[in-house]
Length: 527
Image (cartoon, rainbow, N blue to C red; front, side, top):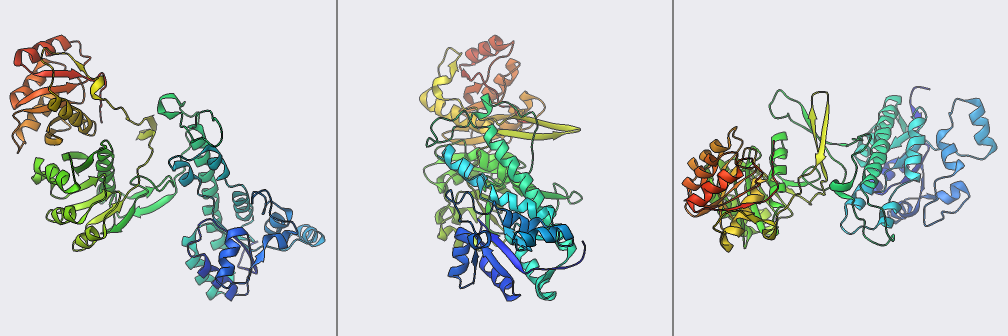
């Protein structure tokens, strides 16, 4: 059962064709017969390789639009029979089953398909791979005789080992590959189960999939978490802590981002990048956020990325040093030229123009990551002995939903500023106070134990004039003193959830000071 095994026949059927041709050439070099299916066979033939069709091996054509091609006894018998078992050997000989010594398979990209905007239910279901996982499990179960290769990242090491051993693979290698294969199928089935659990009852199959959403989808009876390792990190929040990044396979969000420049991303980089990316996703207008330790030291909207960046930086240029930046538009050369004047750790954006890339190339350590928006429905947090799961905070308030509770109504400019401040405040650690004006944060009071202290701290650190600004509070003012503090700082209008037993006292204080105040009926605690 142990020892090296010669690879004489390999079955190749892959969705991700990265490195496939070079790997197949290495196999052919050692006299390995290549058996393949559909598009994989076409790719190999176009590269000049001799390939045997799966239908030739099975004596049965591929059918049902490719749904049935490898689900056949001559495939699974060739994989699963134990070479040193006399009864197995006799059975495969009797039925003309040829041994398959290596299976090279990766699966339909279900997560990517499921996360694509406008994907239909039929498309999603069609991208549930059946034959692939079946072959993977068969080969992994019989790892003592068969090598299962599920990732292009393993091609080089396998080719190197076969070169050194005249076409054979060690037992230890086959065991390592089998464990990886079982982890792949477990993660794949988990992704399907988790995705379908969030789908509302389907209408016609050609209509776009509608998620039942966090508000209506039940929490799962069993929480399935299977995320493949994306990369190991140098360390965690501190050098004495180990860390790694895992991804859901959707190629979206910060975990699925594409780094195009700079040093290796750190744990803290990733946490801060996620914070700034999520903040700028709040806005339809061009927006820039500068984050330090997950809190915005500046955020702004503008007609261009350059304008938004300058306004965001202006709010707190000292804290911005060594921060990370999130942008919800492609970064152009003009914005890049301005950003390179500041020491920045990393930038997240949907893209960068060639001019911007050339400009940023002068800052070789600066990390640039391209990001696609993620559809985060729920948020998970570990506590000792278990996990907490909650709906993601996707609450939004429009001007029409605000309730004016004071004698003075906010002006149109104040209303626009209040909505802006409210969206930023949602991404500030509680207790949170945000001072803002004209689509620009003026100052931020974050993470204070007292709401009055948050208001005082924000006012104290302001470098821009506060007079005529607005203020947002992530939760209600429990006493009039918080309202009085932001008014004394210069705020003329305030947005807060309301709901305190002392609301009437706070409203009376606002009326006395001539401050306009609106209630949202929604809070945004961020612990």
